[in-house]
Every structure is written in structure tokens, then in C-alpha cells.
Amino acid sequence: MQFLEETVWAPLDRKLRRTASGHLLDQSPEKFGQLRDSSDIAFDGEALRERMAQDGYLFLPGLLNRDEVLDARREAAQWLMENGKLQRGTDPMECIANPEMRVAFEPGAAKDNAALMKVLYDGPMMDFYARFLDGEVLHFDFTWFRAVSPGGSTPPHTDAVYMNRGTDALYTSWTPIGDVPQKLGGLMVLEGSHKHQKLRENYSRMDVDTVCENRRDANSKRVSAMGKARTGGWLSQNPVKLRDALGGRWLTSEFRAGDLLMFSIFTVHASIDNQTDRIRLSSDSRYQRASEAVDERWIGDKPYAHSERAKRGVIC
Image 1 (cartoon, rainbow, N blue to C red):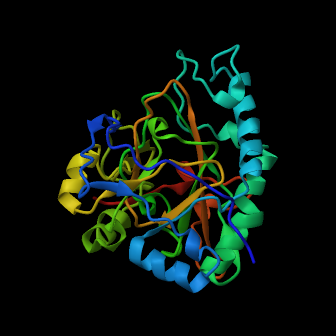
Image 2: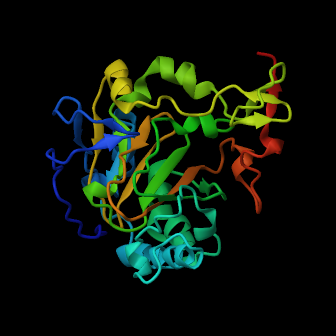
């Protein structure tokens, strides 16, 4: 019989003043809550698929090997220290931020990080996806590595707008690379958002690499030589107003190294603001059945991602 790593996390502290994208979150029970723990069905593929259809996410504390995750953290933290992202003279594993540096995505911390590749693309993670997908698993070759500075966070969005040129049955693993106490600002998902039909048919069908050939805007942050991007990706910059509009609760947890939170590309998610002096480390990796269509932007030895090659022109 298989067992998960023993994980003990504190219940949500509703007295903690939480913000997301700078907006104070309403933590009343009808608007904010704890992620549902799916550890009890972690080795039952059919039950996992049923719960995914119901919840749009699976929270699996202790699914991954904690020591292996901490090895990945050690390699990433050392890279961050060598590249001036951490406060000199401190223990790299503590990830105390260099106050003069601002970080967000740090692909260099993932490059040549063999320990991280083992966590994401071998062992318990791949075994889990084989059960969940009930077939041969393909993972994206591009690895998103997040290093969130003090005060930083990620606004609400779905992953579909960034990777919807393949199958809809694509899933994200959000993996905390180290413990994430509540003040460090972990991920939160919007309850029931994967079932919101208008979101699926409109926003989630947009593509950040589709550009308007008949428009040019030199001030736009997402401009191709072909024209102006149709969308920048974020669904909203205000998680409070978004929840009020869509309903459901923002759901989160305290996280520990070894925990896994995975969700569909149609599930709205965001992160809580980092209220510490440390950098929060996490990775995003993507998985699907090998037999289904794949978004070629994220596959191969050198995925071309959101580069010029990815752009598709349309008349707006």
C-alpha cells in the first residue's frame, strides 16, 4: 500500500490581514476558505477524475518527496544567491530577498537544476499523472519557475489564454519549492470557476500571442512586429471585485515542501501578496495525455514560448 508523506499544516488564520494584488481580501466564510484535501483519494484514478470535474483542482499535501523538493530548493536558492537576488551573508535556503532587487520569473533557477527536474518530471509526480490521466503522460518541456519578491503576487487568470493551442485536457501543477507559511502568500483558486461557461467561451478562448495586424501601439507592453496583442492575459487586477462578480470563494492553504496543488487550465487562480522579507519559490509545470493535441510553443529542446514565432495575426 502506498502512503503520502505526513503533512501537518495550520488552519487558516482569519485574523491575518491578507491582500492580493494590493486589495484587502474579505475573509468571511462565504467568500474565503480552505482548499479541500484530496489525500484520501490520491491513489484512486477514477475518484481523482471525478473530483477534478467537481472542484476544478486537487490539493494533495505530502504527495511529493519532501527531501527531493528541498534539494531542488537548495539548487535554486544557490543560483539566486550567486546572481544577487538574495541578501548577502544570509543562508540561501532562507531566501531572504535583496531589497535592491525585484524578481518574479527566474528561469535561470530552473535551468540545469537536476533536483527540480526529478521532482517535476519523475517519481511521484509522473506516477500521479499516469493514474489521473489513465494513459501515457506528456509534460511540457518549458518549466515556469517563480520567485516572488516581498509584496509581490500574481493577478487572477486562467492558464488557457497562455496555452490553448492543444488539448483542453491540460493540467497545471503548482509546486511550492519550500514551505509556504500563510504570510508568504501562496496560491488561491476561485471555487467553481472552471464551470463558468461564459469564461470558457470568451476569455479562456483568447490567446495572448494573437495580435491585431491592423493596430499598432508603441506603448503596449505586449506588442509584436505584427501588431498589438489582443489580451495581456490577466482576467482582472482586482481579486475582490472578480469574486463578487463570479461568485464562489477564494480557496487557499498553508503549504509545505512536498505538497501539490494541481488544476485545470480553466480554473481561475491568483496568489496572495507576499508579506515577508523573503522570496517565495514555486514552479508551474504542465501535463496532458501524450495521445492528444499539444501546444507546440512549449515543446522541444528550446520551446519558443511567447516569442515572435508564436504570434498569429488577425484583423480586429
